[in-house]
Image (cartoon, rainbow, N blue to C red; front, side, top):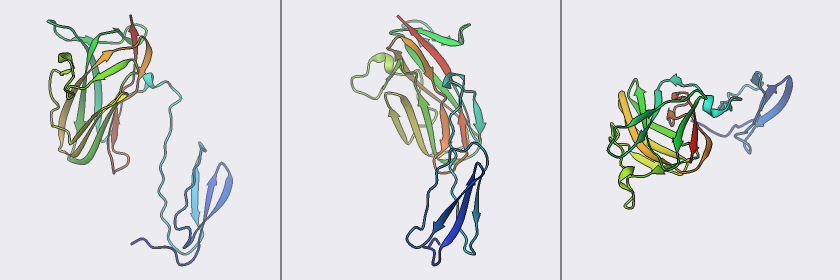
Length: 222
């Protein structure tokens, strides 16, 4: 059980060769420190009382998001795009010689997401950021056009779904072991060159179990 420390607990935070003293006591039972050091950061407890350290590490890649490579650590996820035309089969879109996927304003694009979950999980989130030139087509709206309806429903109905301006999001209270597929549609709405960031699948309350898809560059022309 957690309790306020009865006597002060002296800690030393060292980063980049510089030491900083921190103290936990009855009036300050928790202390937060933010470090931007790129090297090792150490915490030393010089008292006789135990202390718990929660370390949350975040970083931003120096490369553009379009060049992000897929990663798998407990999950695997991939994303593919296809152009949808009336009375024609879907046309799978691949990156051209310039490394970008090319579409035109007004094109309806169906995205397919495949997720591999190697064991039963709880509280799983799947976040799919969209290229800024795309407008999501939410098939659940009463005013949604016919082309908003994707070719297939999710393999397993999500506990919660959100169609935002910049991403599509699915959440599961329970996600059994298996392979899952999601499809939804967007419309190319704004001309320009845009980054489609990596998609992410992760457990919400268990750090480190996650998978990333590769990023992509999307060019929308008139």
